[in-house]
Length: 154
Image (tube, rainbow, N blue to C red; front, side, top):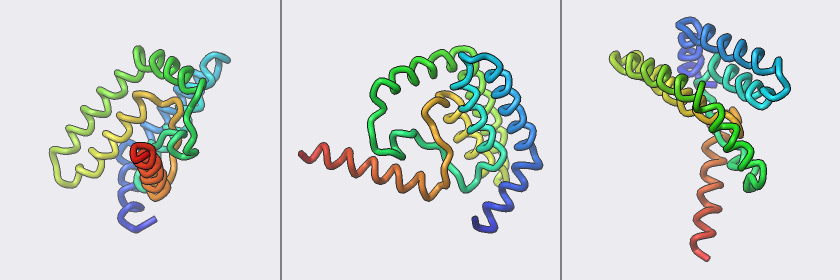
């Protein structure tokens, strides 16, 4: 990790990342109390770890990492994400977008605004997403795009 990312992560952690990450972990613990909430609990823990230290990491769909279609699990994830979105996901998205707009007001806050926008996207549909290093995410997206392009060329 470069020194800029390290500095940004430390500033993020001190200026609210710790509180936001702990909130995700508490939400995951509450979801884990019930058996039905376990998929959301695991997603909360993944996003919580990402919230603590977002710079240098990114969120990608599991199907982009594996190169395989989701199949039947894709339908279940979709339904789970819809159930998540209605009471929680939309609210989290609005909070992160508002925080991003507040960060964009200053030049120093622009990287934090981008981090909030990435968190907004991750919090809307958390099931089926994985947190990986930014390099791995870029490589997975390029590979997925080249596979899609090869399919179009046939």
